[in-house]
Structures are given as C-alpha cells and as structure tokens.
Length: 319
Image (cartoon, rainbow, N blue to C red; front, side, top):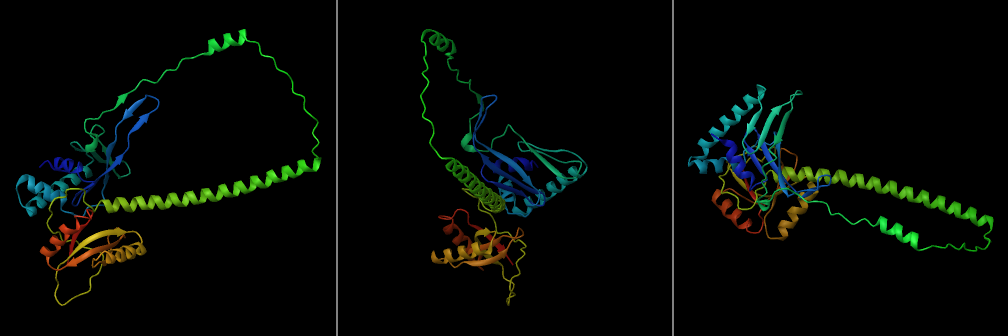
C-alpha cells in the first residue's frame, strides 16, 4: 500500500510518526557544520532515528493515510496493521527492509534491530534548496624572505642590563614557596569540585533530553490534523463510578518528577483552568490535564480554544 510514502510526507511536518504495532520514526534537527579537513560546508538537517518501543496508535498516520485514500479510519487501521505485520515477518526472516525516502531496517547478529537512514534526504523544510559546497581555504602571503633581508640590513645591538644584587632575605623565598603550594592545592580542590558538578549537570541534562524526546513523541507540531478520538489503555487505575463513561482529557504535559507536575497544576489553576493529575504513562512520566470532559464535542471545542495559545495541547480519551 506504500505506507512508507505517507510516513515520509509526515516527517516533514512532525517530529514523530508512529506505525501502530511496529515502532516510531523520530526526527531531530542539527545545525550547519564545517568539515575542517575538506573545507566542506553542510546545511542544517533533520536526522531520522527509529524507536521500536513507541507502538501506541496516536491516530496521526492512520488519519493522514485514510484522508489521502478517501477511506474510513477503521479500514485504514486494518491495512496498516497488515502492513506492519508483513514488515515484522520480513525482518524475522533476515531480510533488510528498505523504506523509500526513509532508510533500511534489519536485525544484526545479536538479534538487535538496526536502522540506517538515507543521507540524501533532508526533512528540514527551512533548508530547502541548500546543498553542501566546498570553499577554498584563504591563503595568506608569507613574508619570511623579506624579514630575513631586513635583519641582514639593520643591525641589532643588545646592551646587557645592569641588575642589582637581590636583597630579599632567604626566609621570604621559603614563604613564597609555601604560598604557591597552598594556592595550587586550593585550585586543585576547586577544580575537583567543578568536575563533579559538571558531571552531575551532564547526567541531569541527559535525563532531561530523554524525557523531552519521549514527550515530543506524543505532541503534535504546527498545523496538526483533525484526529478522531482514540481509546488508549493507561497504567493509571481510574476510580470506579456508577457508569463506565469515557473521559476526555486535554493533556498539558508529562513530567519526570511529581513535584514538577504539581507545579504545573498550580500554574494552570492560576491561569483559570481546572487541571487534574492523570497519573503516570507507560514511560513513567507524570501527566497533567488542562481540563477533563465526559462529552467528546465539548472536549474538542475546548481543545481548539486551548491550542490557540498552547500548541502542544492534545486530547487523550480513556474509559
């Protein structure tokens, strides 16, 4: 059915495209670089990676493919499930799965799934029309010969300077040595503490980047499609009510620490929302909702209003 073509189209607009039951293709922007040895300039690009852990259907790919083929959401979901199952079978047989304009997938000797993106495709729209180019290095005039000729013509006379005998007492020299030793020791201690702090900051930054990538996999980019309401299984146990109604939550964000989620809830209350704590998602992130509704139409109407100022807001429906 050419599912990879729909994935390729969406990668220009979104940072994450999930193939339900198979995995997700993620993009990350990289700045322009200069290759020093070859003097080659490369424009900014969007690199692609693959994460086989993200398999939950977010509705993006199904809705886009269904709209393109003028079919229903359920019919397209069935086709995508069949295509994903076919991809898995080919990989398990040891084949290399080549996806047009995306890259190749295969299992290595350790039975780990590998992904090699195509290098000639740039999904960054702001770099459209840009290509790499080589710039010749700037050559500078060498004046060694002229300097040598000037040295031969102009004599230089050096007059030794008369220095007075030092009158510093010996014990002052020892004091200076002791002071130098103390200063060196203190500087070394400060350097050790700085290295420890730097390593701690690096670990925290790495954890923050992982959390951010996971959150980006659930958020939409600019100009999102109108997606249908999807029912997902969550790890949070809902309190049983008299009737099993479907709840529609407008998600504000997912946080690694509960304290950050509580701060977000207080911030939303100050802004006039009626926020709620949604528990943790399958990645262990604490989720916070702007509002919650039992009526799907009211939830969609509220989502449109919130997205006027909060573009990362999205709708999650649970029963």
